[in-house]
Amino acid sequence: MTDRELMELAVKAREYSYAPYSGFHVGAALLGKSGRVYTGCNVENASYTPTNCAERTAVFKAVSEGERSFEAIAIVGGRGEQLSPLCAPCGVCRQVLAEFCEGELRVLLGTPDAVTVTQLSSLLPLSFGKSDLT
Image (cartoon, rainbow, N blue to C red; front, side, top):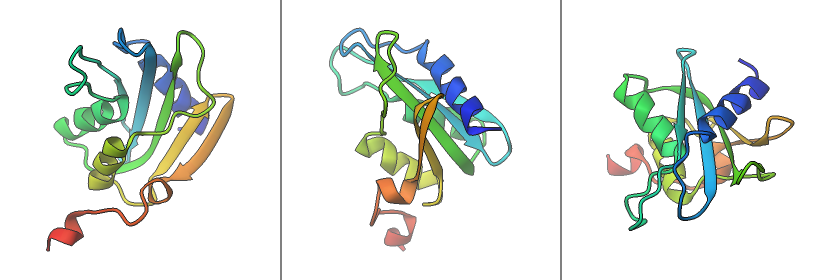
């Protein structure tokens, strides 16, 4: 799967976003090492705390279907129909990704026409993980 295809799947997932409070719609497409893609969107809540981000929705969907290893995640976001030039995952999502993904997970940010590629280890340096609990 190409980076552009993964970004386009994230854009499609964004269409299902429920963001009546912030108006900021986010979509994510997570590529498993199996080749399957798991999509997610943000789902807001009036009390904000139970809100779930697109990235976590995709991860939880994948894990609940048995996938545990991932190659890449594409994340897009923005208000209305306009995509932001860059929509990076929040700290909680970075930690959730670190639980299931190696630090070398490719993270695709931006738009299908202008993709910025980075790695999870760059977004969450010195992360806390399973090895810290042994």
